[in-house]
Image 1 (cartoon, rainbow, N blue to C red):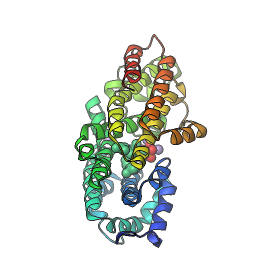
Image 2: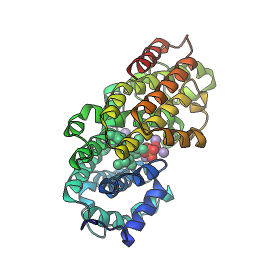
Image 3: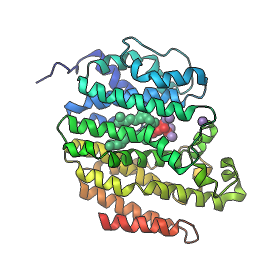
Image 4: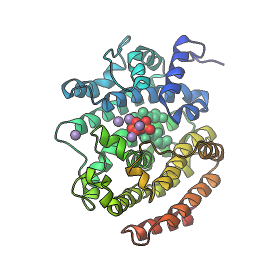
Amino acid sequence: PKSKHDYSNDKTRQRLYHHLNMTSRSFSAVIQDLDEELKDAICLFYLVLRGLDTIEDDMTIDLDTKLPYLRTFHEIIYQKGWTFTKNGPNEKDRQLLVEFDAVIEGFLQLKPAYQTIIADITKRMGNGMAHYATAGIHVETNADYDEYCHYVAGLVGLGLSEMFSACGFESPLVAERKDLSNSMGLFLQKTNISRDYLEDLRDNRRFWPKEIWGQYAETMEDLVKPENKEKALQCLSHMVFNAMEHIRDVLEYLSMIKNPSCFKFCAIPQVMAIATLNLLHSNYKVFTHENIKIRKGETVWLMKESDSMDKVAAIFRLYARQINNKSNSLDPHFVDIGIICGEIEQIC
Ligand code: PS7
Ligand code: MN
Ligand code: MN
Ligand code: MN
Ligand code: MN
Ligand code: MN
């Protein structure tokens, strides 16, 4: 039975899922496997935020133009027919903005409860992005790092949890655990930021907090100098440790999720993140190669295995053991990382 909000045979819907396939590296498949009630809402949530992030990431837009777009994006999504016409880099994602009228049309067909959640998160994320895009403001302290990651990823976790509880698939407790929802996003975002050291530096984006890299080098670009190799790897271990501190919360959150399609949707990005952290740990390629990625076969295996808490716990144990085995005993975070790895074996 189709609700009045179902537009499954619409041209709009085809265009939306086309954009989802074009712009998401890993979310496309897991979103399409969600139950009907949430699939379109989360697809639109993704596309709205992908549009916002494309503006944030575009270093060719001058700040006087960029900041107002970021701060008002939650209003733009209600303006039927709005498109972004300026040419720019990053063609796949840019095309989404050029055809953004399709996203707006889809958004306006969602149930009002989902529209409200998406608009509220977009407003808070856009303002947070604008703050950190402002001239002279950077991620300096560890508190800044947690705050920036809250804006761009933790808030996504809060919004998704609200959707899971609002539709009745999950208990109201899930939406109430904002701390755990935030950690779900922070673990993904910190893994992404740790991996993207070179790519972000090339584009003059700096998300590694000075409070961390300042312990190992005079400037952030000094980390890539061959003579600083040992310090660079120690700094990387510090970043890996900082991300791993969210794993307790991630496992607690996942153990609350009961709906099978929500569980896979939540779990797959998290297991890909710990597999990626394992790939990064003690790996000098972070400082010499852009776009280091886990193998395709490993991704396929992770996506297939992530269908129960027991199996996800076993995956976290497996990678925790590998991370621990790769640690260098002379590394300043050798013991810290060892303790977290030990805890993962206990919790699961
Ligand atoms: C609404 C599914 C499941 C409770 C576009 C999923 C970019 C890591 O920065 O392209 O381009 O290198 O790899 C996703 C919590 C957010 C956090 C954030 C929206 C999980 C705009 C994902 C995704 C919460 C800001 C990856 C946060 O982008 O990185 C939906 C629970 C978007 C989630 C960005 C990063 C996503 C990210 P980049 P990616
Ligand atoms: Mn961004
Ligand atoms: Mn981005
Ligand atoms: Mn800045
Ligand atoms: Mn990135
Ligand atoms: Mn990227």
